[in-house]
Length: 71
Image (cartoon, rainbow, N blue to C red; front, side, top):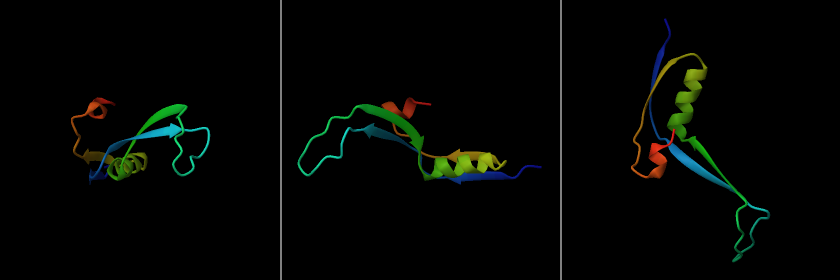
């Protein structure tokens, strides 16, 4: 029988930009790439428990912005 783990925690979408150089104080640098990664401490814990073989459930709140509908 597999153990069941229920995680109550946070989920979020990280927006990561790539820039050609590190900006100095007061300087604007344009991004050359944008990457979206999903995570959050709760999502990471649930993912780790599932990879370890546990039957896993995640309870988390999701907002109503554009990122909330992404999978």
